[in-house]
Amino acid sequence: MADSTMTMTDGDAASETGSGAEVAARSSDGVRSPRFVGGVLLLVLVAMWVAGWFSGTTAEEMLSLTVWGVMLGGIIALGGIGLTLCYGVLKFPNFAHGEFLTLGAYITYGSILVLPQTNPIWRFSFGWELLLGMVLAIIITAVVAIVLDKLLYRRLRMHGSPLVLLAMASLGMEFLLRGIVYLIWGSNYHFYYSGRANPAMDFPFGVRVQADQLFVFALAFILVVALYWMLTRTRMGKAMRATADNPDLAQVRGINTERVIAWTWAIGAGLAAVGGVMYGLASQMRPDMGFLLLLPLFAAVIMGGIGSAWGALVGAIIIGVAMQLTSAFLNPTYGPAVAFTLMVLVLLMRPQGLFAQN
Image 1 (spheres, rainbow, N blue to C red):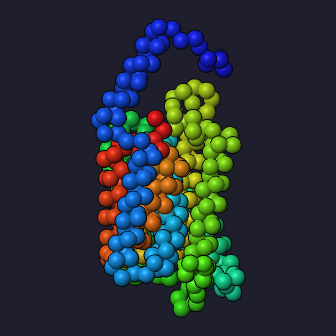
Image 2 (spheres, one colour):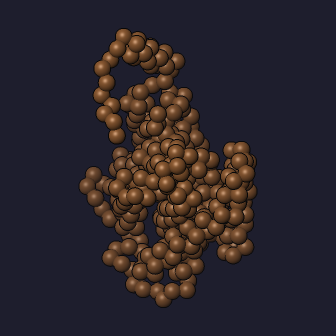
Image 3 (tube, rainbow, N blue to C red):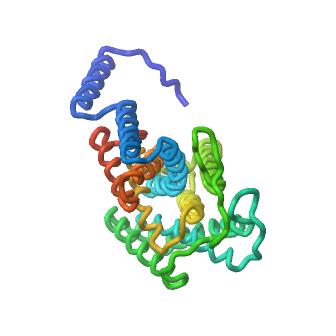
């Protein structure tokens, strides 16, 4: 690669002055820096914390809600990162992505019903059969995502279909997948282990956290770090980033873009499946759980900056904490509305999101 260091000419100086003027103009149009937006979000979270405290919730309970919010953010991040990966490579919003969470949760549930029951691991409420079922759910959900791409999305791409058609096709697929879940498992709520004890653990400052919640957060953190390593250190990760930047140029350079797309679907759907299992473990399973999480997923991705994995992680944690804190003084059913409100607040100050690529 040629050395990019060049001597500045008068024209270059004029160009740089023009760019500075453009930056100043953008700032005058109301686009704020990430630090400013982050500061505003921090103040909003503090205001939620204070509002919960004034509503009668103790400081210890608010601190516990904050910790639980971080763990909920980890679940949202697993789905959000897969969503932003698919958007970065395929360039369309996949509205069926939430159903990958539902499929992962219910496939694991079906596996637990079939596999022999084992004793709980450590202080967790689950045994080895849940971990085996989760691995099976990752594989099956990834295969489903690849098959859907081959049968539907790839044909639309080959015909040069517009973005809105791809989005509508994914919305139709969302209803189809949810209908399949209803047909197989019914409309009732389910628990992985009904009636099994899941005691809370006491931590400093009055924080009470269940062992299952610690497992959810630890697994989400490990998977995010592993994904970051894959994207930055492996050949496939570099190919995925190259395809996301310029698919035509990547293909000219010898990258098999269809293979990259298949891996993108597999990784995104696999992460979503794990997120669904973690959500079902932390609360309960319902056929529309993926649809209910879809708005927080998109809010996290858009807030963090579309195409940025780290942005999706940060946005998910902010939304998870906000949804938990507001449950101290609002009905928890307003959680998606809280996520949408925060997303709009960020976009009003920084339309490209917190961690925009450009």
